[in-house]
Image (cartoon, rainbow over all chains, first blue to last red; front, side, top):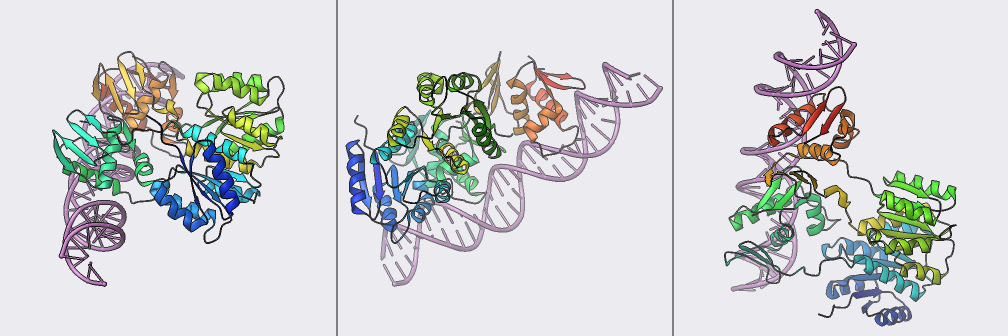
Length: 228
Length: 228
DNA sequence: GTTCCATGTTAACAATTAATTTACACAAAA
DNA sequence: TTTTGTGTAAATTAATTGTTAACATGGAAC
């Protein structure tokens, strides 16, 4: 199967820059999308669901920094790569950018070659991620099917809510392995999102209740694991 | 249990640079190792098995680039993070560095703050949790598996409480070696936590009781060791 | 636009399990 | 014998999780 190309969203207020970067990334086989300012960047991101977002720091409406903060606050962009692009090469803004959760920081004047190299380096590193995220898991008589969002036990379908399903799918992805509460939080809720202590428990309880069988084991002080 | 710190190997021929980088990374909680040239860097890497290697490009004996190429050729360093450090800020060498498989490229004069931020950013992204931490230990017919949080004796699973498990895992990590009571305390309870005299004994007793076999030997006046 | 419902989150409390301390018995070393 | 250190059981305290109900929110149905 042909791999889907990596999707890159580029946000900059200068059309020339958008074009030259797009051109060079396209040539490397990436699929590119553009936005003219911070607000548009966030909107476009929601729609195109990019693998990488390149943000100019100085943009009208919303700066790149602000856009970054908003994006990082949304669970679906928690793990999206972000590169800042800026004329400011001073170190404090660089540090600030990296601490906001950016993955790289490239100073203008940009060499497109350097930018492309850095993009490649980032993707090379991330490449290890699981492609079969929506392949159905089968554990004995249970099927966890992300494509249809359904759990089947002995061919009986049991509907789960989104979070419940995600949680079960995560645990079921490695049966027997213990998932720390922190792992669960960062995987399902995202690294920056903070929810209360009891949130995971409540979802676990609902899953146990709906499935009717005890397939989730508590490891006190550690986390939970899937075990039939 | 305290998490094992990330290990960083720094290679540079200027002692001052080694020292200042080490100091700053230590302060962030990293464990650092040093090498004075490319050859030494490769040798040290084999021994200390670092999570990240920072290579100065211009070094005697072997340059950072050469060292990088050698390391990338060895299976065990295929996925190790590499950052180049260099005075050459020209773009061709930067591109070459990234294409050799480096993950980042920082130009001198270095701001240690920027370097630290970039190191943090890399680790944040690569959630390569220290694999050693949850690798299962096998000692004869006993398996101590932290990823599943179970102890198996002859394929029979025995559930242990958190502290009990951590304690057994610690002792089992070096069978035969005696762990001082103070070592056990600082490893499992942390250096700041103070608990009573009998706490360790009681946990040891519970482990012995649950496992049913005598695999922990008391060395009076010294500590405990794992011995099947 | 309003109402209704499913979902997600939180808070309060109960239940459970784990961790620690206490008290004392026992063994080895001084 | 005295001292010191360790093993054990029971009692106590602390920590973690389970449960329920209430509230918030957003989308679907009306």
